[in-house]
Length: 252
Image 1: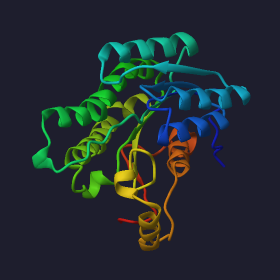
Image 2: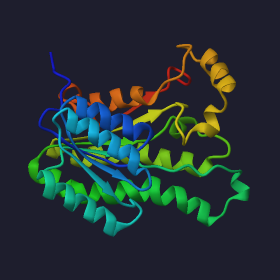
Image 3: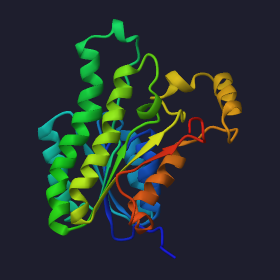
Image 4: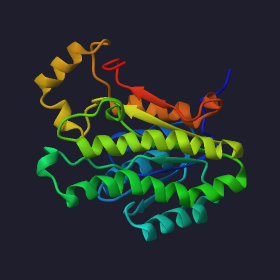
């Protein structure tokens, strides 16, 4: 049986101070990984993950950086390699969601989503890939969304960015599979986080959503983290170019 362990691995996680990124960092550390934790504003969350990781005997590096800026990307990767000497797992998790009727949005609104959700993963992956190709090993895990399948009103551009991530994941997997690099993405449904509150709403609204879900409950960030762990370990050696949808069956 393949062990779900990350012992000896180094994971670079963006947006690691809250939501899915924070949950992924906590679980990866518990399963043996050393961590490079990136944040833009959520330093306290990253520091919390780092404290837990170090208490478990892991190494943890907390790095502030804006994934929209190429210079910040280069510095992030350089500092990670300087500290750990390798990057085995890249988790492109950082994201933003601009909410509003499309006809009432403008270029600045679009850029907010596109710069973080598309250009961030593109630039960071391009910076990490030569290292993974040289070592003939790597895992790239991108955070897409259920909205890459069905979209949603008032988040048209965000939905489009996550659709891009889904297809880019497939295309990149075809390019780099020859180097023993697996590229996959995760498509969370409406799992309550601070970013998704527009969809998950009040407690009463969440209860109604849960009642409509085939599993009769909503997910939590840890559900996404467990999926990321699977994609990061040897258990998923023969899986690439896929999106695993974590939504309790809300769409099938």
